[in-house]
Length: 193
Image 1 (cartoon, helix red, strand yellow):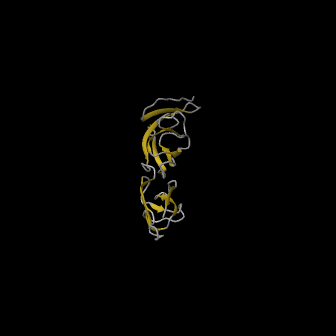
Image 2 (tube, rainbow, N blue to C red):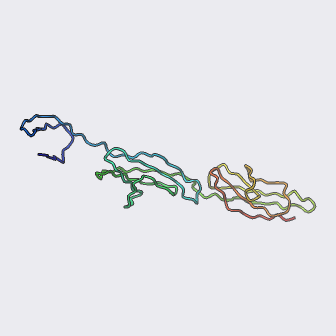
């Protein structure tokens, strides 16, 4: 008859196999431990803009016995794809669990800017009377990802620094773009003669 000797530990066993006619033969069988469950990172993407949680993580279980289920930061809801989207910058605990409830815990970091892209040190010099094009605007940037680009026409044109000279009286729309193409909201600045 069929027998299922469950609960065996890894090792070498001698098995007596008997056929329907009563002939028996001793065979040596090796029982091996399964390969431990582990986790591989398939793809990982950082957060590009501070205000936008667009981090991405794709992990894949290995070893153990498929199928695998994935849990993010102790969640009780399993994820069967290993894909986690819309992540903020930070440290995440990912648990992979196989069909035998064996598991592995990994700590994975999603990087990103530590501060929002913002204006800094905005200053202006209005044009003097009689000389229409001697005004200036200077401003800097903080946060986001360097290098920065600067615009005074609402983002139509950018330059690598925030120093603009030879300006006439008028309304200027200041904008900053960082290395990840994140853009600040517009700051309106008026130069008067």
